[in-house]
Amino acid sequence: MNEEPGRKQMPELARTTVRRFQDAFNGHDLEGVMGLMTEDCVFENTFPPPDGLRYEGTAAVRAAFAEFFASSPRAHFEVEEIFAAGDRVVQRWVYRWGSDEQERGHVRGVDLFRVREGKVAEKLSYVKG
Image (cartoon, rainbow, N blue to C red; front, side, top):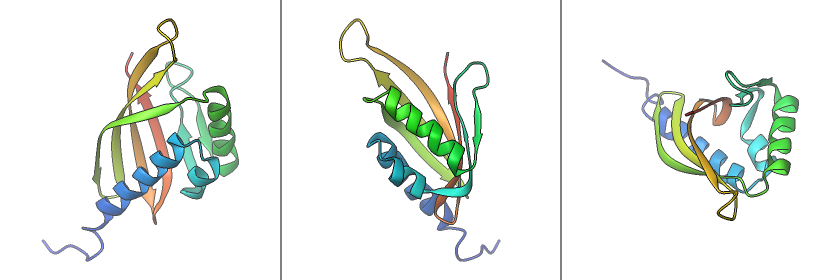
């Protein structure tokens, strides 16, 4: 089977894009995050259960991320695993919160990304429990 020359490079480009996105997200760099998203981007949040909210377009996604950064100033997602197939990237993570024993907690989850032309077009988030 002959593949198009760019197809083999697509998973690496997608993985690199998501890594850059994650670095900006963990840095609470709203401009950096949004600079890595397409104009017609989609974000599906994990909250409220069971299905979360869906945000479409840069204005809605920007507002959702800005609210998250403001309400969770110490938010950090530790990536446990990341892999790509074509324009899709799967990232398994742990999100931890709280600075003392009483407030400490964590949740594990997965993000499914779709990357188009070096930008995130879709970020669908899921959590365990």
